[in-house]
Image (cartoon, rainbow, N blue to C red):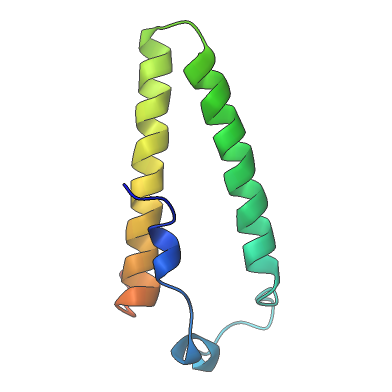
Length: 87
């Protein structure tokens, strides 16, 4: 999967016009929070990758890769295809 695949689909005008709850965080919170989360996930994945080979190591890295693919698919569905219900 190419890096930043999910980042290709960003919110635009239609997202700003959505009816959102009053407790929705400001838009600036999302890139900060997601940036920190992805940095921490990458550090953990690297630490797992560097661990001794085991079934748990392989399963953990596979789960991490699956999570990245699902997250990219969500961005494509929600922001790219504008499928708010499915996303």
